[in-house]
Structure formats: structure tokens, C-alpha cells
Length: 93
Image (tube, rainbow, N blue to C red; front, side, top):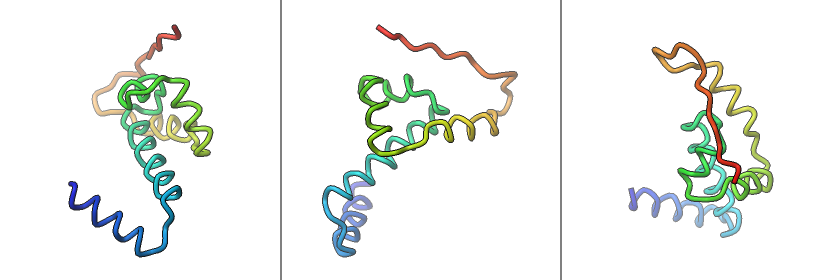
């Protein structure tokens, strides 16, 4: 995996991508991947990412991501064998 990442970084560098833009793109893809895995649940995603939920929400806003679109996509494709949506709770404290 490290070699794949190094190749990707090298390609980004060769294509003229600046560091700040590369970091921003990495953040977008990483956060969107975790949000998709957690079916748009920001509390669980924040936990998986090792950050506070408010930090995740601020980052989502700063990156101009659309978590609602992720939640809607998750609703359209229910997991096999699921009888209905599970209720998720988030500790607000």
C-alpha cells in the first residue's frame, strides 16, 4: 500500500499539484470513504477517524462535502438481510 501511495504522490507532484491541494483532496477522499462505510452517520465516522464529531462536521463544511447525499445513497441501497434502518445514537456530551 505504501508503494501505491508513493506512486500516487509522485504522479500528483509531476502533474503540478500543490501540497495544500493534495492534502485537501486526500482529506476529501478519506472522509467520504469513512462516511460511506458508516452510511453517513457522522458520529460513528468521527469515532472511526479518531476525531471529535464537531471537528468532523467543521471539516465537512470546510471541504464543502455533502453528507446528506451520502445518507440518501445509503438509504437507497439497504444492506442484504436488513429488516429496516437501525437507530443510531450519538453521545452529545
